[in-house]
Image (cartoon, rainbow, N blue to C red):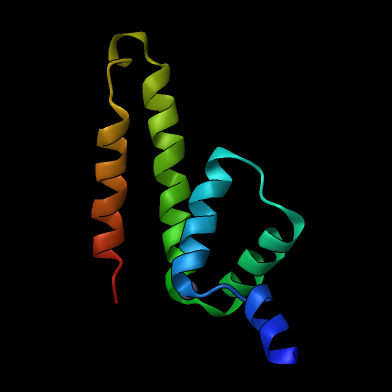
Length: 90
Ligand SMILES: [Zn+2]
């Protein structure tokens, strides 16, 4: 029981990065937010990933505010993220 509860509360790295990505698009539920925060407290890898991911998102957001560059595709954004995730692999 306790173990199961702990597992739901503490996401694995895959779940944590997924939550972090989701967070950029929409607000997380209370439990998801807590789980992500707890995970980031002890996982350096995901902390770094989230930091990078957030920075890219902000950068791309600024980038897309420029009228002449509105053609930037969502796929390019995803490619960037994949590239960075690849670089951050332990
Ligand atoms: Zn992690």
